[in-house]
Length: 167
Image 1 (cartoon, one colour):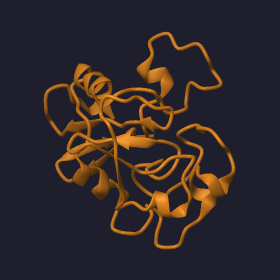
Image 2 (spheres, helix red, strand yellow; image 1 turned 90 degrees about the horizontal axis):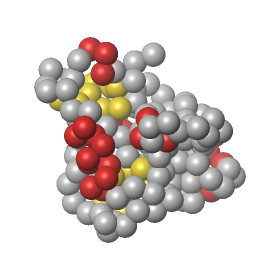
Image 3 (cartoon, one colour; image 1 turned 90 degrees about the vertical axis):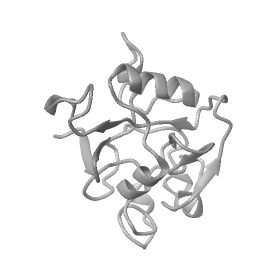
């Protein structure tokens, strides 16, 4: 399965960055495939840069989410994301929900840092349907790490750090 999705001229991570990917030697198998949380925007950007990537812009993130209210369409479905209505109460593995073709886990689970503006996108497991609307941005302090915020990576197609195996 490809791990990146083409969005315009970039490839965006199909899933948020996981604990296992972010923390070398991660040894908690139960949380390995959950999105990494408790990182500042600078820490997220530095991780992306080490791999030859970067954080997505708000526009790139929104393009990956698509033109509908939620990534899967205009009718809310709590069985397609980790949210209050789904009742999980904490993060879930990034592959736990099918949100349609393309990037996954864009709605619910964890908010995601973007490169421009002091905002996060996507909502988290503590949000209800309204908080998960794809077009919504939440103001966020880029220096504050929280247990509800993670990120995903973007590669420039053919750019430094990108190879066919990057996805």
